[in-house]
Image (cartoon, rainbow, N blue to C red; front, side):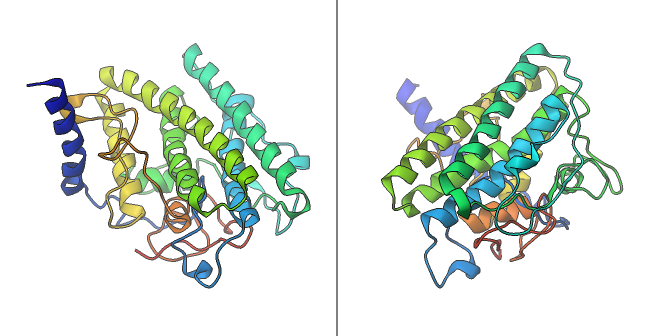
Length: 313
């Protein structure tokens, strides 16, 4: 078999994975938001196209979420209140604490990503100026009815009434990060055609590239650890399937395992391109709800700004 034939077979296998998906989120009950920014696919936005400011404010909500998660995980504290003010209702952060990292490489990755996500919040706020939205209420806690636990329970990682602690150890932290990072990449990718300003488009492309680096680090590290820990590898499959179930009938999400247990670090289509999600699909995952809702999951009171509604699937 030639290298070209092997490559074609590998690409075709990604399409065949569509038939292998299971509906992991049929019992999901929360709603929240997580990463990203495509400004289509929401009934609330059907009457008017979003402005560049609308898009960047949607992204800012998701950057608040990521920055708070990583900041607590690495430093044990959240963002300064000076970075949380703006238009809309400012909300608190529920949960979050420092991770007792034992793997120095994971600890260093986490610190670097935390610094990057905080920089994204600062950049978006500075770019938007007085139009920047305030941080909405965010749930990154470990309670049995919290966002992380609801996501893990729907994916089959924990049972009824049990909690998932994303701060317990290196592996749990990586799984928590895995929930966010891939969604951010697909959100910025989907938003890019909707941005009219070249200045905003360049900025969005820059953030997309950074989020893709982050996702690659998380996926690579999980794959390396999963080779020796089947339970960890299986957890990544469950999370990927759960995200895919939430965002609609189209098979978009790909886990870190390719054909014959090969690595799948870069989730691409048959043309070698990263895929996109609409804002509605992003909020489906963030709200942990397949229905058209305006709050839940990681964003208990919804996000701030004009783009608030998830998609009905």
